[in-house]
Image 1 (cartoon, one colour):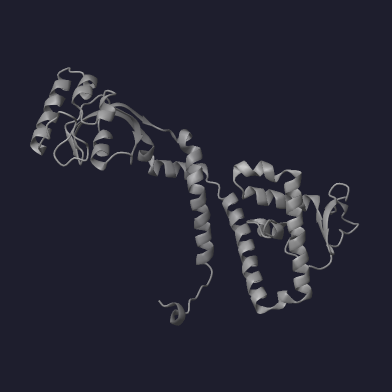
Image 2: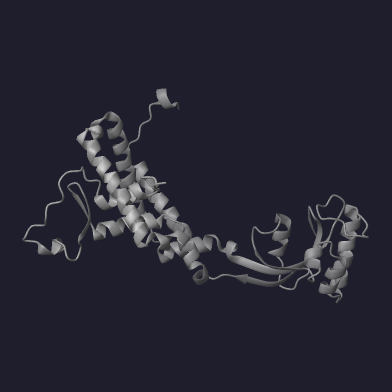
Length: 308
């Protein structure tokens, strides 16, 4: 079964390489007075001719690059194989041959064709402009620092451990052989455990024997490192306020009462986050530029048709 004429991305790449020329004669050679503008045929030979139009090696390789860029990474190497290039060339030849015949039959002059070509042309040039805007949207050092300072809390991490005492209604399963404690009894038990730890008891051993979070309890209550937004709000608020090695008062969540100890607190530096911030605010800067262009353009909607 033959591959579809218009593979995803082929039309756009084809249009870019051929410049959406209106199917006439090939481009005129550069004037003799400006030899640098001309490329010798031996350097950039014609590799495909369709009717009166010619495609050079450079133009074809631009198409290949455009098409493969839209493929999954694992398929890109196969697209460079000679048989894949030949298949693409045959598709382009068929597309161009049909387009030339369509123009001979003046299909390109029909209202439907003109409307679609106008839309595709708008999409093409608008897309190229957006690519340029995105490329130019490089945050300055001041932009990066401003964003970092405004979001500094997001780059804080803590390493903590906890002991959980569940109460009736908790989503945490009741451990085998354990009593289902009321809210008051669970709070009292949590306070008792905290007092033992403050008095010198082993947090790790008490977590192993008493914590109803058996997953972390078996590991001495260890939760590892986490950032803001990873824990339920009450737990997060307490953890990020605690000093290192401080033992929290019982903190209530929907799971029960937690005794929390922060073992380490870190904050990623501006240098650590520079690349990540640039990737994040670059698109935002590009969109801001798009909004500026739109805002300075007079746009009127017919309210009788679109509504208010």
